[in-house]
Image (cartoon, rainbow, N blue to C red; front, side, top):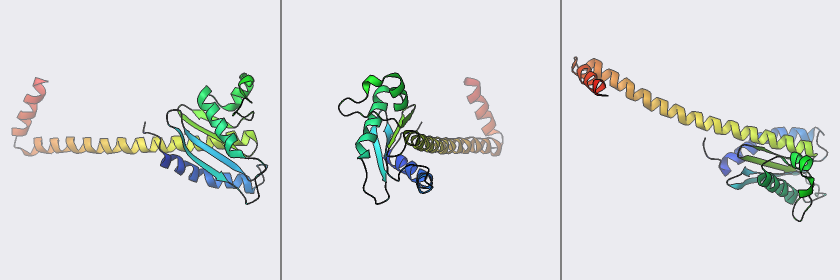
Length: 178
């Protein structure tokens, strides 16, 4: 699997932006403020993003989103499950009592600013986009390798066919010795 990069996470957030804006503009979220923190278990935070409507924020959502991210990385589970199964670890200095993050293998995303279930849903959307982009990169790299391999075998076949039998004998001797 290709390595997760800041550019790839930024692209995923950009691709998710129309959906996030639709949720906010359609009144589905309770406010138009959102902080996103995304990255991986190995590399930590790779990208953050802030959505706002120009109205001053009621709360500082950045530290809350960062706390959700850190809790998810530490316990390797979404903050909703931490809240349900280990509530005693929440609310300590520097941690939030709120949920709204997701983790898929090594990829982590946390959001804060809207309802917790919306924070979690947006986190899932971003992670799914990241995974899709990673699979696309992996497929592109595989197709490049296949193309190189196909060129090799096509050239081998041409060499064998057009060498007036000499290539075939050489190939036969080579394969016989394997």
